[in-house]
Length: 288
Image (cartoon, rainbow, N blue to C red; front, side, top):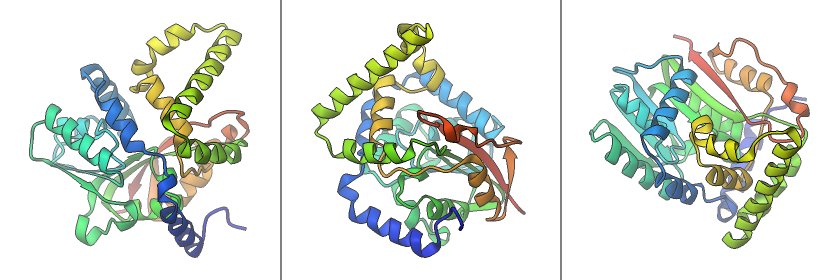
């Protein structure tokens, strides 16, 4: 049996997701709070991460689509690197407004457009197609991940890049899906208690491994480009939640008419990880 959703299953999953929209984690609120911490050092880290992911540091003349723009921290480097136009979309009003504010404050130009738009409503005849379609850690939160990937792929120009990052599947994904659904419904004060408990667990883990937890927190922004508490809140609350093995991920997109550029090999070893599998980044090029 195929491990991927049929189109009918995907439509059903998306419809159910939309019906339960009130249970979705409020990513936009978290990004709006995080955006107050954005400074040049965090922007520089985001630029390095994007450069490594795209395999280039010059976007002169390229059109760039940021799906699930969050705080705009990834749209900003694209503008600074000379993209002819950046389109940032998100289903969350707070994310759209935060991205607009961050871009206006840090890249005053008219070469960007921010829009509240679901990937399921993104029609290439209206939105257009792009030289680079980018989405980091977003499509697995849509409620119909594989359909969302197909939609994103349909927005790529011939010979364009599709750069996606999705959660790696692990043996604990069933647990995390339940946890995230419950967490997303909790009052904020209870969520804060959960963050403290998770932090205590991480502190204990560092102690057992002989690592300095204080140093880990101090270096967190440099290593991740993200604030620790905002990142943990995002992880614990990320509902809807889906995941995929790296090999399934790569094979699925290749069947849509793309060739994988990076990484050269994919391993499913994270399946047996007894924690978060993290995100698998894969860059694809569309056949001309």
